[in-house]
Length: 406
Image (cartoon, rainbow, N blue to C red; front, side, top):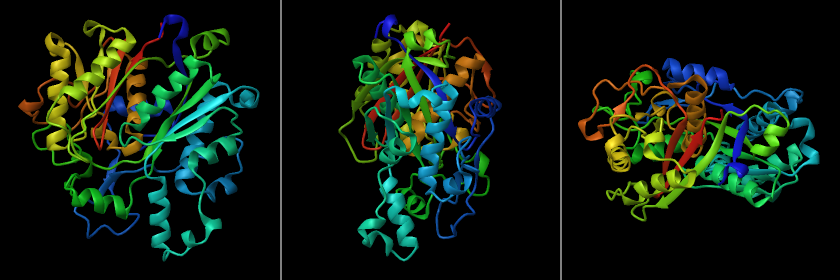
């Protein structure tokens, strides 16, 4: 995109294991705080992994009926809270009905959440057609009164990045005036713990939850499930400047590829992942020497972290020792569908505070994952360009480039 058609993030709505307001989330990320704890909301004694990064509560948007909001399904509350707060933060809430507001929402397992909840209540509700819930992108556009196009998408852990890319494209095409984009997930449930546990993808460090998520560490033994979401308001730079809006960052590049290898195992061929990152840099018009920070997808699995580190070394080449890399999943856990949206916030935090958030628990860096790691503590650093990787199950690779707005 040209400078004239640049897209800014002017609003953020989030509910995460590290808080619900951007500044508090950013502060917790830079302080290296973990949101992982023991699961106590349902029985887990038969699960190999008994820990997760959960949200404490889902705040009711200002001015809404708290009682009515509380009666909605948890995932529905999460989506509506993120969207409404993002619109309010951007300054568009009171004017949303007079403009074309689009919505692109990453949603991975909304039907599984519904079916599982029904099964735990003896499995009778879904048999009645009138009890079948609406899709959450449909719920959001109806409740919020959005008149632009609305889309729900699922590319596993890459969904958040894809949502931002689609929204950016809609703005470039002139289909919308502003666009809500992000992803939400509440995947901490008996079914998810069982499924990922049986895949041996989850950490089993149940005795010490806060040290369980260990991306790039030699002792990593799997990821920790997280939950939450983030939604952003994207709008053209020209519109944002005209009304004096706050710019969190510019969404200036995106790249995507597919491994075409396996349903859950990353491809040993680094080519597709490398292509996604290079495409994002090319789209943004960013040279390697301009990259300030990379937020890695790195989930803490033995195979995935090593393969991503290899891909990053290929992309960075001579710049490997210079470009700091961290995985904030060490603090938030892996928010599954919402991972990319959560890590977009981490990138914005790095830009806002001119500091790189750390990979906590990186006590013994794996030589096979050699990069310029930021371990344990945030590192003050000039951050102008952030690359955020999200690589999803099934081999969906995405890379997003954010730039500081002067």
